[in-house]
Length: 342
Image: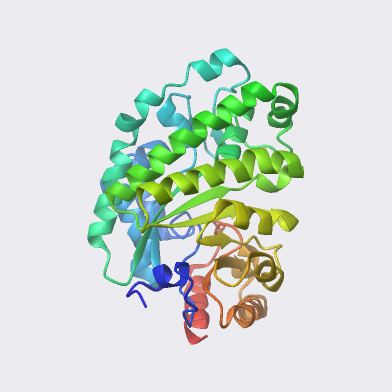
């Protein structure tokens, strides 16, 4: 077994108790994060200031003893690096100038990428140097479809109608955007690996809103390209895919992409997911973040059910989506105790 439990699980070993980290484990629910965030002044400054970004990345490792640090950044730092305007409105989320035509796509510049991401890579290197020999470092990017959703809409959305309208009505333009994001994501994740990331994760938060044909074209195909390119360039580095709300498409995603691990959202039955993906892929998840907020019996029973399904299989304990801001840190500490007890 690797000395790092997450790397062992991603190699197909049934580590017990399973290693654990939590999506958005560094963030607003922690008072020490809020203190750094106030100093930074704005979110992009925080993401591009290596000292601050490394500190908030390491805060949950120190506080809870999780088995992995995940780079503190945002999936929209990639379009920002390509030249699309980005700001974070307090209480409203990200805002970008909507990309709706070929001229807006042509204005993006992959030549900006290396310079723009340099401070993020410095953060990766700082975190890797600070971790002990049992704690892994996870780098990440948004998957092309989910990033495209924000780029086209200019913000979050309940239905991403403009994105779907482009995918159906101007498929060549949408395919060109996905292609640019796929190649840029390969370069971005490869750079994170060279800087020290031992695992990379691809977040496709809005994958489940697509019909099967579009899911294959814009979720599975780009993820497969990214995974294969990284496997060729960095054969020892493990890859996790998270096609949120993929449902019945999860098994097809697993088979086509060759990911070492798959994130499960809270709506996924871990036993059904295991049957769909086979015995060798690590499944990651999938406690409801609001069960963590509630604590008590909801948290205890949720953790127990996931552990019961996981025993004997390669597993990474996590949430089904990110920690929400009003989560009590004491509940996270209790969660760690529950998982460690097996």
